[in-house]
Image (tube, rainbow, N blue to C red; front, top):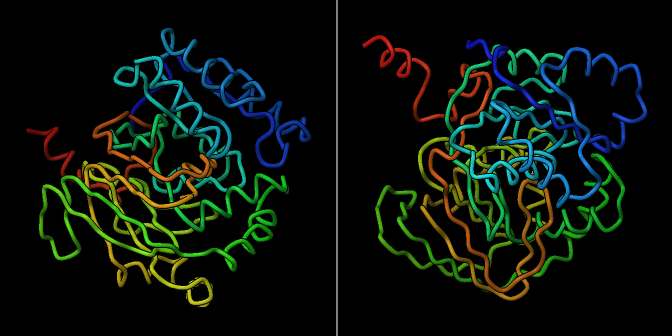
Length: 323
């Protein structure tokens, strides 16, 4: 592990994360602020203000830490990229939300106090990200899971119960014919294509570099954090079959039997495509453009636990460093 304590560290904390637990639990807040390295700033209420705050602190920071859930992570990442310092700033995560999908692929513990260890002494490695329209993210989806995300935000019931309540939207989701245009593609048989067009009436299309959705759902088991590709999985089944198979989908077992592609870039065309990124609802649109950002940012984490999702594994990195 590396010693990051000498770096200038700024922690951006979402006070509304985890159903406002940060605001309610004063003792937890005091202990965490005392333990967190560097300076601690509460993020503003809106996404735009959080992005702007991140952008403003990046020129004077070596390590920027997002303390919150996947939405906070998305906003802080966006601010880092808009500052133009993504090649100089190291990014860190302390989970304090309800879903916490991104931290799982990086081997970061769910407990925020245990996660601090990986800010101070964690491994630093480089990962890919994706750009969806004008947003930076680690994962995205088009279709039913995005529709559920939008429904959850509309009824504003937080946490797992809010997701379960919103999941009723899945039962009434109508599948329509969509077109996917892939660039720099590889299919599940390993065949390579400069351009590949696919027709699909998918229920859901998951695109990502990281492997998990919220609540430890292993949605993309074949994705790799640093292979330079988007990982694209098509769930081409009716809603009731999806619900019946969900235990197998949750643990990532079903995905190996589905149509699966790697690509540098994808354009999805359809009618009223519902889209989410990092658990944030992007909206309904007829065209979605997503591309990989290779070697996008350096991040702190637990490399041993993240190894199964990395191409450049720790043992290979160690052998290169000894040469």
